[in-house]
Length: 67
Image (cartoon, rainbow, N blue to C red; front, side, top):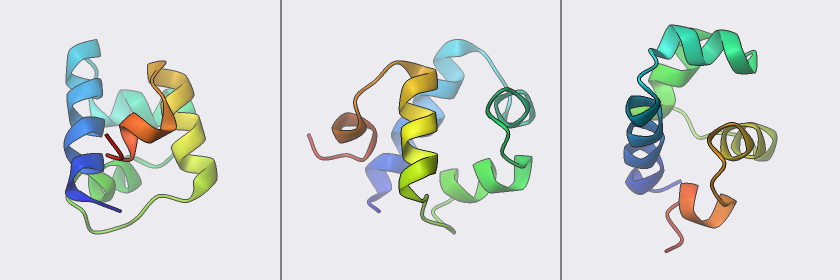
């Protein structure tokens, strides 16, 4: 996964004005997982990407940094 994913995930979360903790509760991930995604310590699964893209109403390609 590219660093663009980490940046875009954080950007989406901050635009909504929600914390990592709140996001994790809303989509059923651990707070630590969200933090690891944003710090590029862990790559998301396809399932996680779909959940995040759906939640933020963005395309998978955009979230993954494909354009």
